Image (cartoon, rainbow, N blue to C red; front, top):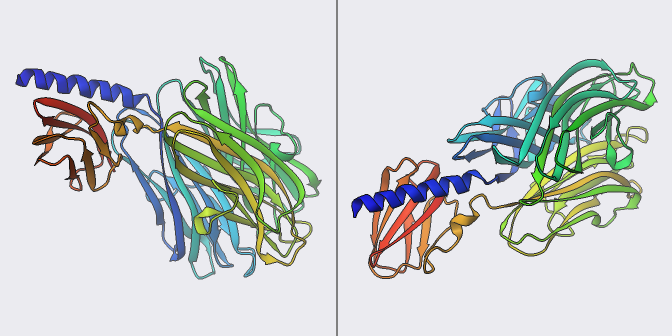
Length: 487
């Protein structure tokens, strides 16, 4: 009998590991840090994952940073508690004591093995430190694990210094060769250095050129002291099976009285999402001179998943407004926005330099059924301008069935466990009579043994390391197997 039980345990483990390895999963944390000291590298958010197979991890940190004049604040998505130079970070500066909020976006992609990995949102006041070294950071850290398989992730770190861009110039490219039709999400973000009197166009594109309105963003140097700006641009394309190449494009356009050179440090990220397994919704946004005195829906995406999961919602692009107005911008599951990490802002510096690139991400747990997500804009707090804004960008929604969704499903006569993943306690429902409960690691080591005579029982798992576990429940000569994640 013991041999049969162990064999069953091995077979169930093998099945569960194969099932889990086929799943993409995403974790996220909202960041709301008010007036923190960032004179040294400071962790403002972290996420730990424990994939059971090798794959790729997309780490994205975006939002807004409030700082004081004289400080340069470095911001980075990282696999360490420090940041790296060039494409390993972005930077923002307060323009003055009144215009001191900046949106930012930074992405990194890492190859990972099975096991536990932690990723960080990092901030530091660095190089320019004449301010008080204090910053407030509101945003989101998102970690997406993609196992090796049909879901493809391509990535190019971009570190190009002082390149002529008087013509459309390719700063990075990624080629993929999917075997099935699907959608491709192309994201180009980072920071751009340029000279005064140049407008630099930046675009994620499926050609070596850019498109107007929602097909690009733009940045401008304020003066010789403020020569760098952050940016974020996303496009989504339908593709067939075969080879496809996508590009990060840079071009000095319209305003060309500077030297026509640009330095760009950032990332080109390409995600291929198979049609039959996941959902991608996309709305290109091109709204010219609209009244945003009240919360205004500038983009909307509706999805109808058949199972529970997570929706990753991103609103990015550029906003043109008038001096004296502060434009709030948000990805949201309602037709309004939320404070702190629930929005970013943009402000025009002058009538001439009046465009800002922005990025805002939210992640929502959703059930089966129809859900709508929105790109929201409102002129709020500072309203001395005309309340009119032009917004060009993208609202992108990625829905993933829970990588651990099958873990919460009832197994054999209504026995279920929740929450899953769990941090401290795991609830067990549906047991009948006296029950013995065993928890095993993936390697088969028993780490918890528990007895109960209750139909509903709570298991303390706080002492376990983060990772994937199998739980075996024995009652009335019946065996129930489930898997759960401790995080």
